[in-house]
Length: 276
Image 1 (cartoon, rainbow, N blue to C red):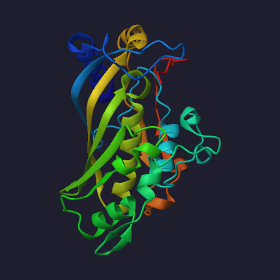
Image 2 (cartoon, one colour):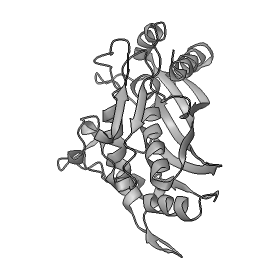
Image 3 (spheres, rainbow, N blue to C red):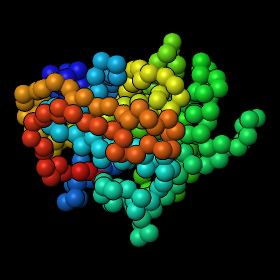
Image 4 (cartoon, helix red, strand yellow):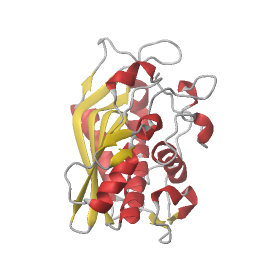
Protein backbone atom coordinates (compact mmCIF):
# COMPACT_ATOMS: atom_id res chain seq x y z
CA UNK A 1 0.00 0.00 0.00
CA UNK A 2 1.31 3.44 -0.87
CA UNK A 3 1.16 6.15 1.79
CA UNK A 4 -1.16 8.02 -0.58
CA UNK A 5 -3.55 5.03 -0.53
CA UNK A 6 -3.47 5.00 3.25
CA UNK A 7 -4.24 8.72 3.44
CA UNK A 8 -6.99 8.51 0.80
CA UNK A 9 -8.71 5.55 2.47
CA UNK A 10 -8.57 7.25 5.89
CA UNK A 11 -10.02 10.47 4.44
CA UNK A 12 -12.88 8.62 2.73
CA UNK A 13 -13.71 6.62 5.86
CA UNK A 14 -13.66 9.80 7.95
CA UNK A 15 -16.11 11.52 5.58
CA UNK A 16 -18.41 8.50 5.32
CA UNK A 17 -18.46 7.81 9.06
CA UNK A 18 -18.28 11.29 10.57
CA UNK A 19 -19.29 13.61 7.73
CA UNK A 20 -22.41 15.75 7.50
CA UNK A 21 -25.00 15.37 4.75
CA UNK A 22 -26.08 18.47 2.82
CA UNK A 23 -29.39 16.89 1.80
CA UNK A 24 -32.17 19.42 2.22
CA UNK A 25 -29.79 22.39 2.18
CA UNK A 26 -29.79 25.05 -0.53
CA UNK A 27 -26.99 23.72 -2.72
CA UNK A 28 -25.69 25.02 -6.05
CA UNK A 29 -24.48 21.89 -7.94
CA UNK A 30 -26.87 19.84 -10.01
CA UNK A 31 -26.67 16.54 -11.85
CA UNK A 32 -27.14 16.49 -15.64
CA UNK A 33 -30.79 15.51 -15.13
CA UNK A 34 -31.40 18.73 -13.18
CA UNK A 35 -31.66 17.18 -9.73
CA UNK A 36 -29.70 18.70 -6.87
CA UNK A 37 -26.33 17.09 -6.11
CA UNK A 38 -26.02 16.61 -2.37
CA UNK A 39 -22.86 15.54 -0.57
CA UNK A 40 -21.46 14.08 2.60
CA UNK A 41 -18.85 16.59 3.69
CA UNK A 42 -16.08 17.04 6.22
CA UNK A 43 -14.60 20.42 7.12
CA UNK A 44 -10.88 21.07 7.44
CA UNK A 45 -9.09 18.01 6.10
CA UNK A 46 -5.28 18.20 6.32
CA UNK A 47 -3.16 15.59 4.52
CA UNK A 48 0.65 15.47 4.49
CA UNK A 49 2.83 13.88 1.81
CA UNK A 50 6.60 13.51 2.13
CA UNK A 51 8.07 13.51 -1.38
CA UNK A 52 11.34 12.12 -0.03
CA UNK A 53 9.40 9.03 1.02
CA UNK A 54 7.37 8.41 -2.14
CA UNK A 55 5.52 10.04 -5.00
CA UNK A 56 1.91 10.38 -3.71
CA UNK A 57 -0.10 8.54 -6.36
CA UNK A 58 -2.81 6.17 -5.18
CA UNK A 59 -2.85 2.61 -6.50
CA UNK A 60 -6.51 1.82 -5.75
CA UNK A 61 -7.15 3.05 -9.28
CA UNK A 62 -4.97 4.72 -11.86
CA UNK A 63 -4.32 8.44 -11.63
CA UNK A 64 -3.26 9.73 -15.03
CA UNK A 65 -0.03 11.26 -13.78
CA UNK A 66 1.14 12.67 -17.12
CA UNK A 67 -2.25 14.32 -17.77
CA UNK A 68 -2.20 15.84 -14.29
CA UNK A 69 1.26 17.24 -14.98
CA UNK A 70 0.11 18.61 -18.34
CA UNK A 71 -2.65 20.52 -16.54
CA UNK A 72 -0.33 21.97 -13.90
CA UNK A 73 2.03 23.14 -16.66
CA UNK A 74 -0.97 24.68 -18.45
CA UNK A 75 -1.75 26.69 -15.33
CA UNK A 76 1.68 27.47 -13.89
CA UNK A 77 4.03 27.46 -16.87
CA UNK A 78 1.86 28.46 -19.83
CA UNK A 79 -0.32 30.59 -17.51
CA UNK A 80 -3.14 29.87 -19.91
CA UNK A 81 -6.89 30.10 -19.53
CA UNK A 82 -7.61 28.53 -22.92
CA UNK A 83 -8.39 24.83 -23.26
CA UNK A 84 -6.76 24.74 -26.71
CA UNK A 85 -3.41 24.86 -24.85
CA UNK A 86 -4.36 21.76 -22.85
CA UNK A 87 -4.16 18.17 -24.08
CA UNK A 88 -7.04 16.77 -21.98
CA UNK A 89 -10.73 17.67 -22.21
CA UNK A 90 -11.45 18.07 -18.49
CA UNK A 91 -12.10 21.80 -18.74
CA UNK A 92 -14.26 21.72 -21.87
CA UNK A 93 -17.61 22.22 -20.13
CA UNK A 94 -16.43 25.53 -18.61
CA UNK A 95 -14.98 26.98 -21.81
CA UNK A 96 -16.67 29.43 -24.16
CA UNK A 97 -16.72 29.18 -27.95
CA UNK A 98 -13.15 30.51 -28.14
CA UNK A 99 -11.93 28.00 -25.56
CA UNK A 100 -11.50 30.51 -22.74
CA UNK A 101 -12.43 29.81 -19.10
CA UNK A 102 -12.35 33.54 -18.34
CA UNK A 103 -10.01 35.29 -15.92
CA UNK A 104 -9.35 32.08 -14.01
CA UNK A 105 -6.44 29.84 -13.03
CA UNK A 106 -3.49 30.44 -15.40
CA UNK A 107 -4.72 33.90 -16.29
CA UNK A 108 -4.25 35.07 -12.70
CA UNK A 109 -0.75 33.63 -12.44
CA UNK A 110 0.26 35.55 -15.57
CA UNK A 111 -0.88 38.97 -14.36
CA UNK A 112 2.07 41.30 -13.71
CA UNK A 113 2.36 42.97 -10.31
CA UNK A 114 4.66 45.77 -9.24
CA UNK A 115 7.30 44.96 -6.65
CA UNK A 116 10.29 47.00 -5.54
CA UNK A 117 12.46 44.55 -7.53
CA UNK A 118 10.41 45.21 -10.67
CA UNK A 119 7.28 43.96 -12.41
CA UNK A 120 6.71 40.20 -12.15
CA UNK A 121 3.84 37.74 -12.25
CA UNK A 122 3.19 35.43 -9.30
CA UNK A 123 5.14 32.45 -10.67
CA UNK A 124 8.20 34.54 -11.47
CA UNK A 125 7.98 36.12 -8.03
CA UNK A 126 8.08 32.69 -6.37
CA UNK A 127 11.11 31.67 -8.44
CA UNK A 128 12.85 34.99 -7.74
CA UNK A 129 12.33 34.69 -4.00
CA UNK A 130 13.39 31.03 -3.84
CA UNK A 131 16.63 31.96 -5.59
CA UNK A 132 17.32 35.26 -3.84
CA UNK A 133 15.54 35.10 -0.49
CA UNK A 134 14.69 31.43 0.03
CA UNK A 135 14.11 31.54 3.78
CA UNK A 136 11.43 34.21 3.46
CA UNK A 137 8.06 33.40 5.01
CA UNK A 138 6.26 35.39 2.31
CA UNK A 139 6.62 33.13 -0.72
CA UNK A 140 3.08 32.41 -1.86
CA UNK A 141 0.54 32.68 -4.66
CA UNK A 142 -3.21 33.34 -4.67
CA UNK A 143 -5.50 33.05 -7.68
CA UNK A 144 -8.78 33.69 -5.82
CA UNK A 145 -8.96 37.31 -6.93
CA UNK A 146 -12.29 38.81 -5.89
CA UNK A 147 -12.29 41.64 -8.40
CA UNK A 148 -12.20 39.09 -11.25
CA UNK A 149 -14.56 36.42 -9.90
CA UNK A 150 -17.45 37.66 -12.03
CA UNK A 151 -15.33 37.03 -15.14
CA UNK A 152 -14.29 33.50 -14.16
CA UNK A 153 -16.29 30.63 -15.64
CA UNK A 154 -15.36 28.59 -12.56
CA UNK A 155 -14.14 29.85 -9.20
CA UNK A 156 -10.72 28.35 -8.36
CA UNK A 157 -10.88 25.24 -6.18
CA UNK A 158 -7.15 24.89 -5.47
CA UNK A 159 -6.36 28.57 -5.04
CA UNK A 160 -3.20 29.15 -3.01
CA UNK A 161 0.32 27.77 -2.65
CA UNK A 162 2.65 28.76 0.17
CA UNK A 163 6.29 27.73 -0.29
CA UNK A 164 8.63 27.29 2.65
CA UNK A 165 12.30 26.32 2.65
CA UNK A 166 13.43 24.29 5.66
CA UNK A 167 17.10 23.31 5.56
CA UNK A 168 17.76 22.00 2.04
CA UNK A 169 14.14 21.08 1.33
CA UNK A 170 11.38 23.02 -0.38
CA UNK A 171 7.98 22.40 1.22
CA UNK A 172 4.58 23.75 0.23
CA UNK A 173 1.03 24.10 1.50
CA UNK A 174 -1.76 23.75 -1.04
CA UNK A 175 -4.99 25.41 0.05
CA UNK A 176 -8.19 24.19 -1.56
CA UNK A 177 -11.64 25.57 -0.80
CA UNK A 178 -13.52 22.54 -2.11
CA UNK A 179 -12.78 19.05 -3.38
CA UNK A 180 -14.85 16.36 -5.07
CA UNK A 181 -13.03 13.44 -3.44
CA UNK A 182 -13.86 10.84 -6.09
CA UNK A 183 -13.27 12.96 -9.19
CA UNK A 184 -10.25 14.96 -8.02
CA UNK A 185 -9.07 13.42 -4.75
CA UNK A 186 -5.65 12.26 -5.93
CA UNK A 187 -5.46 14.34 -9.09
CA UNK A 188 -4.72 17.58 -7.23
CA UNK A 189 -2.18 15.85 -4.97
CA UNK A 190 -0.27 14.40 -7.94
CA UNK A 191 -0.14 17.62 -9.92
CA UNK A 192 0.99 19.82 -7.04
CA UNK A 193 3.55 17.21 -5.98
CA UNK A 194 4.92 17.42 -9.52
CA UNK A 195 4.92 21.23 -9.30
CA UNK A 196 6.85 21.06 -6.03
CA UNK A 197 9.41 18.75 -7.66
CA UNK A 198 9.90 21.17 -10.57
CA UNK A 199 10.13 24.25 -8.37
CA UNK A 200 12.64 22.53 -6.08
CA UNK A 201 14.89 21.42 -8.93
CA UNK A 202 14.70 24.81 -10.63
CA UNK A 203 15.79 26.64 -7.48
CA UNK A 204 18.38 24.25 -6.05
CA UNK A 205 16.46 22.42 -3.33
CA UNK A 206 15.22 18.91 -2.65
CA UNK A 207 11.44 18.38 -2.79
CA UNK A 208 10.15 18.09 0.77
CA UNK A 209 6.65 17.93 2.15
CA UNK A 210 3.37 18.81 0.45
CA UNK A 211 0.64 19.70 2.93
CA UNK A 212 -2.84 19.64 1.42
CA UNK A 213 -5.51 21.63 3.26
CA UNK A 214 -9.10 21.13 2.09
CA UNK A 215 -11.82 23.35 3.55
CA UNK A 216 -14.75 21.27 2.23
CA UNK A 217 -13.87 17.68 1.34
CA UNK A 218 -16.97 15.96 0.06
CA UNK A 219 -18.36 12.82 -1.53
CA UNK A 220 -21.39 13.33 -3.77
CA UNK A 221 -24.46 11.20 -3.08
CA UNK A 222 -24.14 9.31 -6.37
CA UNK A 223 -20.46 8.64 -5.63
CA UNK A 224 -20.93 6.99 -2.22
CA UNK A 225 -21.28 3.38 -3.50
CA UNK A 226 -18.35 3.90 -5.88
CA UNK A 227 -16.15 5.17 -3.04
CA UNK A 228 -17.16 2.30 -0.76
CA UNK A 229 -16.11 -0.22 -3.42
CA UNK A 230 -12.91 1.68 -4.25
CA UNK A 231 -11.46 1.82 -0.75
CA UNK A 232 -11.90 -1.95 -0.29
CA UNK A 233 -9.67 -2.78 -3.24
CA UNK A 234 -6.22 -4.32 -3.16
CA UNK A 235 -3.40 -1.79 -3.02
CA UNK A 236 0.16 -1.79 -4.31
CA UNK A 237 3.46 0.01 -3.73
CA UNK A 238 3.78 3.62 -4.83
CA UNK A 239 5.20 4.25 -8.30
CA UNK A 240 8.66 5.67 -8.82
CA UNK A 241 8.41 9.11 -10.42
CA UNK A 242 11.61 10.89 -11.38
CA UNK A 243 12.39 14.21 -13.03
CA UNK A 244 14.99 14.80 -15.74
CA UNK A 245 17.97 16.17 -13.73
CA UNK A 246 19.30 18.11 -16.70
CA UNK A 247 16.44 20.65 -16.65
CA UNK A 248 17.15 23.57 -14.34
CA UNK A 249 14.81 26.25 -15.72
CA UNK A 250 11.17 25.95 -14.64
CA UNK A 251 9.96 27.12 -18.06
CA UNK A 252 11.89 24.36 -19.83
CA UNK A 253 10.11 21.47 -18.13
CA UNK A 254 7.92 19.26 -20.29
CA UNK A 255 5.62 16.39 -19.41
CA UNK A 256 8.18 14.08 -21.01
CA UNK A 257 10.75 15.09 -18.37
CA UNK A 258 8.82 12.99 -15.85
CA UNK A 259 9.45 9.24 -15.85
CA UNK A 260 6.85 7.00 -14.21
CA UNK A 261 7.93 3.47 -13.34
CA UNK A 262 6.34 0.47 -11.62
CA UNK A 263 2.86 1.99 -11.41
CA UNK A 264 0.58 -0.97 -10.69
CA UNK A 265 -3.05 -0.11 -9.96
CA UNK A 266 -6.56 -1.41 -9.69
CA UNK A 267 -8.97 -0.90 -12.61
CA UNK A 268 -10.00 2.60 -13.61
CA UNK A 269 -13.49 3.85 -12.78
CA UNK A 270 -15.19 5.01 -15.95
CA UNK A 271 -18.06 7.43 -16.56
CA UNK A 272 -18.03 9.08 -13.14
CA UNK A 273 -21.09 11.37 -12.94
CA UNK A 274 -19.93 14.97 -12.48
CA UNK A 275 -22.07 17.60 -10.75
CA UNK A 276 -22.07 21.06 -12.30
